[in-house]
Length: 251
Image (cartoon, rainbow, N blue to C red; front, top):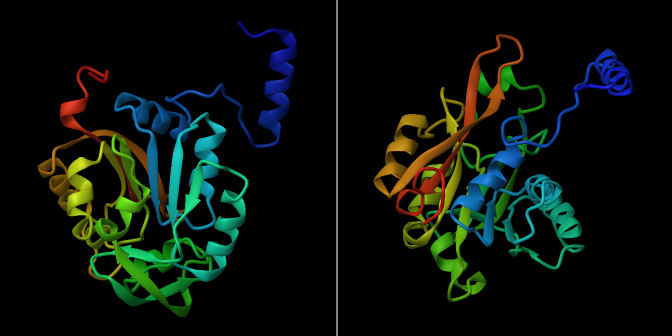
């Protein structure tokens, strides 16, 4: 029951255009994600497309205390990521590199907001829907297959989870992670409802691929919405290893 003091505080927050809720998997996407990890007892997150470490910091804020390994190709975000992770003994940062389906080098398009940067050309629908998403430069960066670099981070009984945030390049990440995927406990992947990058695979194909690899779609979270029209452009899908979950509980 709300006391008079709580009501006063809530109303004051509402006047500022904000709301306040108890941390819950119903209301907080990171809390929901943490609960999903607990279903399959994950002890290592592979944060692919980490940018400046926002995802890792958010997970720490809701109580995830296991290991994180982050991957980021762009020079400036990478520097910020290394700084953030340096204060956390369970958070490692892989040498600056994109993750994909080849080992070598590749050119990445850099967006003004950095988070919309991608190997793939951006389509007009994306640029028009998100301020600051337009490309302003390119960088030549190292690229590696996850299958080639992951063994150095694993222990014999590691139970790892892939978080993939690569702006349309998800399919190529999966192509370079076939061995990795076979032993993963789960995957979080962007699912585009409409084409945002030239050559990307859309949500149906990603879901079918991951279901074919033995995962079940466990949760969907809101991603990118067009501010002008309100149309949902992209969402995040959380997939868990089907054989590891049963009626909402890990075996």
